[in-house]
Image (tube, rainbow, N blue to C red; front, side, top):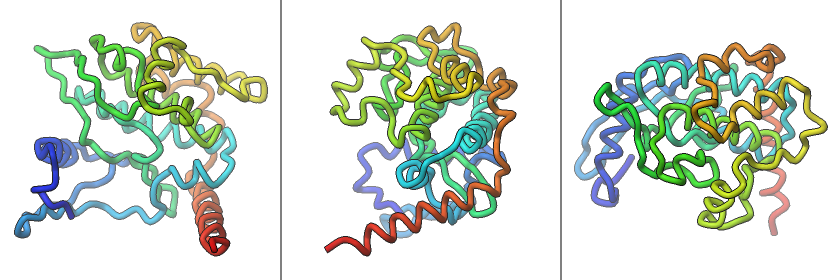
Length: 250
């Protein structure tokens, strides 16, 4: 439920609704309908009981097999969007929703961009700073592979509990993204060769050499993916951790 008068850019909401309405896919949250009720816009969407991936990222330790599962399902959504010439531009754990029987779906299309033959690239700096690709920060021309970079950052988020530079303010983080290029992978020596290569490919600074979502779906790292239903245990563990912290609060 959104009060339209409080939305600074109402066109973003309309853009989001239009994209969701035309993007029916198993890994994209299903849009059902919307209603204008007085000054409020009610958007009816599929309910995913597991909540966002962020709780699992912050409250649990994810194994490579779980990260591979999440990456595979998000890549399937990205392949579908990119084939329709749509860039999401805000891939991060907050925008991945989980179901209790293994559903993994991306949401929040407020920043997405529709490309066309006449306009096959964008140069607008939009998204969430910590997950932004270098070419977005530098306002260079970019295409769908910015989402692949953001997926790589989300994989680091699942590994470390937060994205690189999270302890810095957003402006400083943007500086690090442009000056450092590929972020440091803290636990690199502990990772399997396939996972290291997957991260290196996602976080390739040169966007012309960064693989597409379709190419990455064939990457050997994804073969170690855990069954979808195994994510339920992580969701429940995250909930228990959050409940315990609330109980411990004075």
